Length: 80
Image (cartoon, rainbow, N blue to C red; front, side, top):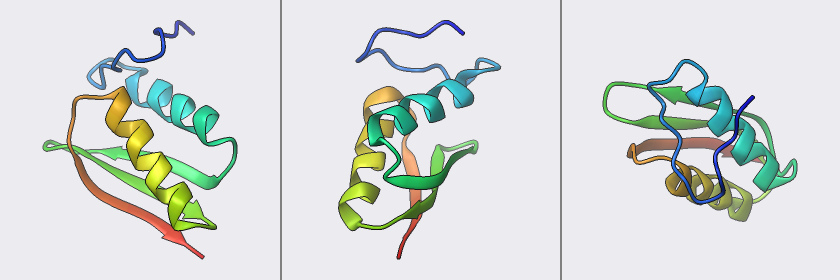
């Protein structure tokens, strides 16, 4: 799998774009968000998964914001 340099955005219109973005975010979070996944819609992306802290939830959101130009429609990561 080809990876882009850190700081470059992921094109979610490419076939493996969502998979690449999810992998980048998982790597950056070091397991702080379980079952992390992205749902890409017409207007943006929705984050889903489970985290132990609100900080981890926020880190996931910032990682996605840095990796794509699409807006985040919702951060549905559950904190428990």
